[in-house]
Image (cartoon, rainbow, N blue to C red; front, side, top):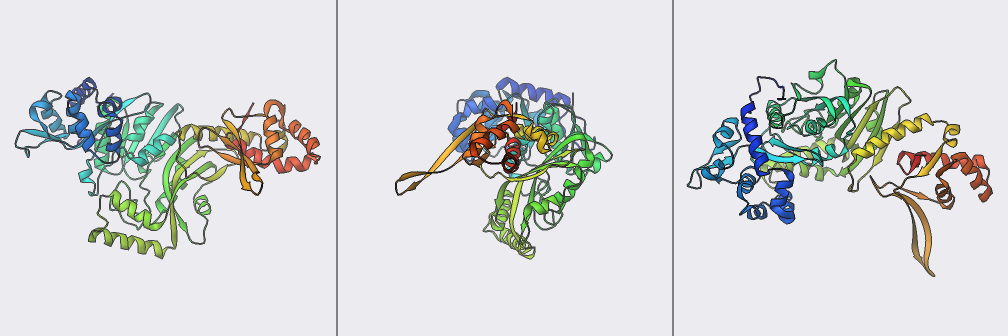
Length: 499
């Protein structure tokens, strides 16, 4: 079905144009797998680093697919005859995808928009966004970038009835949502973003409700099973240089307001996930700052993935805008930004993922730092975390936990480590580690290691502690009091699982 969108937004990608373009893209194999196979691993990796020349060379002799890769992905100018052999350039030009370019002395075409293949392990799509040459425009619409990929990899993918993609941009999160959600709604405040998202959905033949307006205003009085958002999270002065990244509010105030409001738009048990940045202010712990934003009645898992000092934060986002940091314009912006930082005693800027779930039970709020690169997507871990929080809530009393049968996860590993000493290696300690997901790691002493070895799903935890108390010649009550908090953490991190 075609995308539904505000008819005032002229995407120019009508049904006939989309059908013809889609047919051409499929026919020549303009997909993630097709492009990767044409370029090869080295040129593909170089293109990911912003080095196009190896990719241009790899497309030589690439036939029709090579023409499309040079035209749509690499920003090349292709001769009229070559383009006409692949697709209808006049129709694509009428849609706004291509423009005439005779600068090489021959009739040619170049891309006016970025159209690239994108997908996951099961689905292929195409995403329309602005070219990098528009990056310094206020309404620039970014494509599939690092933030989009981070959120997509962290999103819960279990089936749902309804999902809101708040601030959809070019529509990446909504694309993923269509694979597991019956009804997808996407909003944005930028008409250009909505137009490109509408074109993306139409090109992919997807039915997505698109609504125009700021923040949650377009969906007032509505509730959703899921909400995902890659909002404008760059913290800085209250101004909007670029719509895709600047909230127009001071510092992290917009994120705070959004976190407070989101649970009201969730169905009972509904989950919201969003990226965000928060200030590390001198004399204040960052978890206390973010905790103050949380309303009642929500489980919250806040995972800090990065911490940047102010200079790095400012420089990163000025580069992201395509500015030469040595230029007078960039230096003026950097100076004003750093003055703002100093006036607010900002020591660093944190970045990470916020997961909220509307609950009627006692809220569980957890803050964690997870700075290392992840080998596995975080989404399955979020699903597991929510399930484990439910289990721990059901076993909140010590008696309930002591009566439970637990076993070590299949991915659990006991590591022993030693340090050099005067007589060789000396045992220093041990840690139980998960070999999948975020690779959680907990140091354990010998009694704890023995207890974990006994967690095989046969005896209740209380029975294991009684046996360990006898072996250690310790009162069982004291041992339980010392052990149960650690057991809860091991369950929450998926190292111990209910039998």
